[in-house]
Amino acid sequence: FLWFQTADSFTWTLVNPGEGLIDASFVRTHPTFLLIALFLVTALVFLGIGFFIKAKQATGDLRRKFFYLGLGFTIFVVVGALDSILTLPVAIGFVRIVMMTFALWMYLGLKT
Image (cartoon, rainbow, N blue to C red; front, side):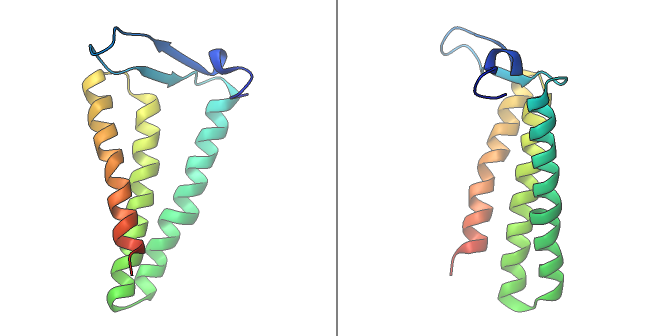
């Protein structure tokens, strides 16, 4: 769906370069949106909640690292969903800035 029906999967309005962010929202009735939603929910359950459960079981430094990983994946899923739902350009910009913190949380959780 995503590779062969790209024009049907997204709705976007092109803006002049430098004037605003490109709003590439999913068409909510297209199968691509449903698959992405399924993948995001699965990532939230297995990765986000799973790392929080492991953080609760662990102690010390390992607990902190699992918490960072759980926080990072939770932020990734929530902000990823908001990025495709919101239409206000200021909100999309804020959401994308928060999405960039995902890399920080992953780094803090995975560094040795």
